Image (cartoon, rainbow, N blue to C red):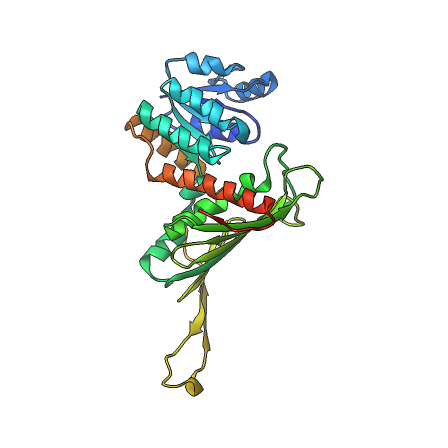
Length: 333
């Protein structure tokens, strides 16, 4: 089918590269208000059709799917126009800049009988899916808590905080692993530049199952860290996206809590075993995500469970932002 990519900043050219490799994408339109960006992409991909006016994408009846990779504040506006024109839409994370906007997009897609999908690429990541399989198999035992660090030096965003930029990644991973969304969130953060969006945040999540999670997010850190620790009752897992050779390690560690006849016999014992690094398949998650999006469009799908998750993620980020603004006051979800 004919597809359009709107927004050719940091992420747009990566989307173009992957779409050009898909058999399901017969032709591609690339759109950006900056003609220099359009020229750069069309020189690299001569088969792509360039334009600087979004209305050209909307008015092209042959364009069936639109991929939006623009600043967060424009997501809802552009996706709404594309949906009203009867086109399916993939919006790069987050789905929208507010919960009301996210809900409205899903409702509009349902009314139009088409699809609006959020670009949560980690839902297609081989290591993330491998950990999900370990959890579902019962091999790890019952999940107890999750701790995640996603920090780096830059890139500072002018229009959104670190919460809107980075939290959707970890929220999509945690939600997939646990099969549930948080019921309560609290957060603290600050900006290193007065008056600018916060660039470091600590987010605490509580789930109905009793699992708790902590997310450390920062654009201001000395080293790049992409590390998530999942502690379960039988085993523990460390997932490091920045270690492609061994992204997942399973630690056969834990504690034994015997049931003594009386308090005097009570002893907590710790168990230490092997550390294993399972074989993980390798593929480009973004390419698989785009292929899945076009396949869903071809099948005529409308919003489903993945889109409900995308709306929940926006709700959590919005709640975390409110918590930061109220100095860490918990927000019920």
